[in-house]
Image (cartoon, rainbow over all chains, first blue to last red; front, top):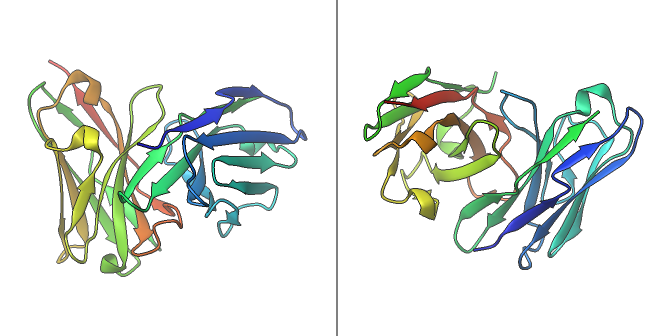
Length: 108
Length: 121
């Protein structure tokens, strides 16, 4: 099975900061990666799909990049609403299965 | 508007089964696969499986194989996830979410509100 490892697991930042979250795959996954934001007790929200495509309605301060085994989610200028947990998610086209990373909690 | 509405909270005893429903509206039900994801208290997201409402074909994560059954009723635009032989560590918030069929790399774009399942003796 392909393992997805996110880092860091927690991150402290301030409004206006630029932050980057990394997701590493145990083997190449091409560009089969999505990113989600989740607030406590709420459903996740899709931010990025196909590694770098911005979901409709998501602010442009969010961006995704990467290919193969290393991927990043960047937030260019943190807003108060951005303090949440973030998850990467891989789709395995061979097994038709999905895997989430363990998550990154972004705190003030 | 496009939405997935899940059934209400459940409390079950160990060894019992639970069936959670997810009703779709605002889009063509058979055009989108429905996935199930759960989150134990204080933990991360865990993918459970998915169903294609058009064919009824389903696939589950290896961890849940033999315990989870996903079905659909196209007459009421609803998918169901049944988890059997419940244990205390199945206590979690269960979500359904959709993805356009055949576009599996496009992310889960609409989510249900979540259903709390508590397993306790």
